[in-house]
Image 1 (tube, rainbow, N blue to C red):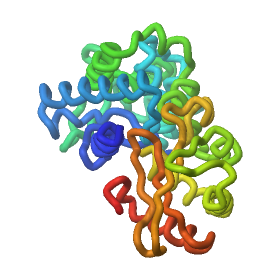
Image 2: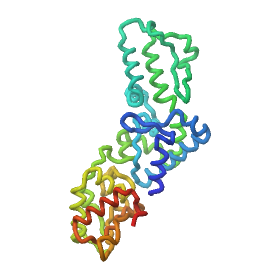
Image 3: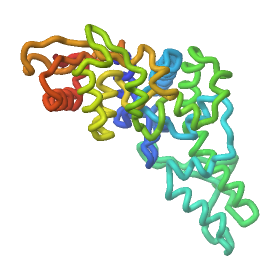
Image 4: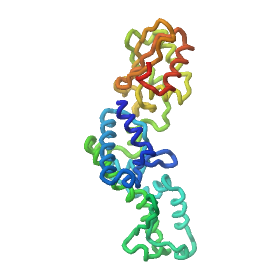
Amino acid sequence: KEFWTDLLALAFDPNYALFKVTEDALMYPNPSSKFVHGGDVSMKLFEFLGRILGKALYEGITIQPQFAHLFLSFLKGDHSYLHLLTDLSTIDTQLYNNLMFLKTYEGDAADLCLTFTVANDDFGVSEQNLIPNGADIEVTNGNKRRYIYLVAKHHVCDRIKEQADAFCRGLWEVIDRSWLRLFNEPELQVLISGASDGKIDVSDMKANSKYTGGYSQLDRNVIRFWSVVSSLTPKQQADLLRFVTSCERPPPLGFASMSPPFTIQRVGIMRDGDKLPSASTCFNTLKLPTYSSEKVLKERLIYAIESKSGFELT
């Protein structure tokens, strides 16, 4: 599981040039990816990532990346053109504002000297026709709505269609697309990445946790642990969840649906300095030493989760 989540974190990193992010940090395919990785290699990478996402969905593993609405529509296999302008506003605010200006422009649109072409910035600006001989057809009051639709469709759909289709081919090899169509885009996002607000319900987490190695719900170290968790900041709570499960967001259906359940395992020690808390992310297990006090437990737990070393830290 940690391999999947680490792999996805790397592949969805915008610096790797397979994906870009909106102003709200939501991800969608990078139209220029084929120029960075090569056409065939780029498509194979997208197919591979689609399979990885499908495997995560099938296993009920939430992942870090959150996707833009326009990309989620592709994943369902029934892309709707009803949200073109809204989707465009999330990836290019300036272009969206320019199109809205044109839409409401009360003068003669021909005065703006626009034609049915669009400029693509793929390591150098190139001009592309939106319709046959578009460079010779000027935008007028009579056809400006068609022009607005075509520009929005070009940026929201056409430029990423090849990458999105490759990703979907991989995804649908693992998950039947008919299953994905049962959800709308926001619901699908929750299914993939958990609740978007990322808030952790500590009481739900506690109620659905298990204990091994000699711990029980009434053990003083367990009581101290939940007291510490309740006192952590939301960021620290998310870091703890990522430390133990490899994802900082809770499961979409709450901790009762987490499989394996969040588990705290007893690790006996003679001195507080002997061990730090560690984790087995494959089993969602926190290995918690028997510290002498709540203060020490909190200090050692925060040190461990902020190191981001996961199960490697002992």
